[in-house]
Amino acid sequence: MAVSGSHLLLSHSYLPPFPDGMLSVRFGMGCFWGAERRFWQQPQVYVTAVGYAGGSTPNPTYEEVCSGYTGHTEVVLVVFPAQPALLQQLLKLFWESHDPTQGMRQGNDRGTQYRSAIYLDDASWLEQVEQSRALYQQGLTQAGRGPITTEIRVEKAFYYAEEYHQQYLIRVPNGYCGLRGTGVCYTGE
Figure (cartoon, rainbow, N blue to C red):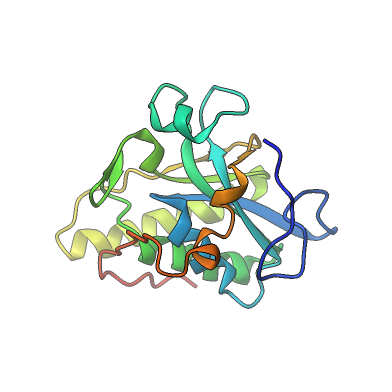
């Protein structure tokens, strides 16, 4: 997908290569427009971009992803300094900003492209992410909520979404954002 690479708010390109010492994670939380805004608002985030991951079709279009045949989910690429404490802050934002118990949907948005997911470049961070899921599940269970369906794995493939999706809520300030959390706080450290 041809994209400019110019983030409309942050002063960095969202195309690699990224500086040394950065970690990139792809977060799937339903529609990627509102999710990207949540992450670009975090002070230590280097850059964000939206795209597709977790499926089998290379270089999918938005229409192909929406068909349900690619297996991809809408994700936000988040690039940030590789620090455990910062990853914890982003995991807190991830868990609290959507409902990770809904399977193939978020609210009224339904389909495989709206599933909850965390895709990592580096397996060394996997244990920390899986621990965060277990911790958040405890809080959800205490609140009477169901099991987390979030897919967590090492997955390096990421396909940029079309240019008009990048930083969409800057381009369309009153655009759709369907993010809704569960109201359960993440108490990770």
